[in-house]
Length: 439
Image (cartoon, rainbow, N blue to C red; front, side):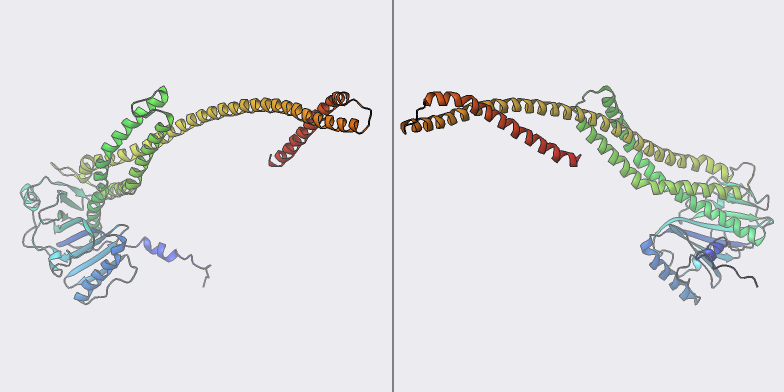
């Protein structure tokens, strides 16, 4: 027996992911009810309890904790539950045909009020009928009866193994309707085809959840673009406007616009990203139908190209405009910030020049004060020497006090000047020694 290295923690889960949510095999005649509900993460526990209550009613095991899909037989019904990223899908299958095209849906076999009690909000709901070829003639009259007179789209699918019809409209009972005619479907092929139709419906509506956001943001984007254009012109022309009087105010206005754009991005990008992802899924599921045209009817792919793709393009355009606005505001802010920095540098240079001029004036004043100080101190010391000389003369010394004072004055002045210079030199050396380690 070959021994392998230890498994990666996610190996088995990833291997099983390719086999998750398998389609249910179907044989005509059969009916199906599908409901997709948006469920917030905080309501997942309630969803699990609601499923457990349904299974308990029919005496079957509930889904395991942490499960993402579950299959069960509820009396005559076959039940499939699937948990996706932001929604959960509930599908109920019932074998056999109904007396009338739209009567006796499988959901009628559920406990009263169970569907209405599902936590979350319904995003898609559909009723489907799988009928054998030859049991009815899907002509214009039959399709008008089945789809309440609405315009029907349809085509041969599966390389002619069957035909599919729908109007993509929500009927008064809250459900969209699908009709599948089985020519040569295998049970697995019929189940896959019905699952693809349900997925096209739910992914189409999930993608279109971004459309109201795009419509709400469009006027804001236009207003921001106009404001940004005016501010950019003010930057280019270097002129004031009634609103913007200087670069500082202009920068504040750009910051406000940037905050508004980023707010719009934060509030919309998840939904716009989901729109693109769901659009790719709708496109993939539609191509997997392998449609062939029926005389007088649009194919599902044509319907999507004319009615669905333009809405997705609108969402993508709004998303791209928001990203472009963000980049343009950032570029304008960077340009203006550079200009503001240059202006501040010039102001700082002018301030430094003014401070240097004041320092030179202060130095001259200080030198003047020092000269006056030398004269005052010399005068004071000469007076002291004069008094000493007079005292010595009175004591009998043969000296002339005036001559002594006159001879002392030059010496005193020279000594004071040299002392001040030496003190100034020491202060300058101390300042340089202090500044050198900081540099």
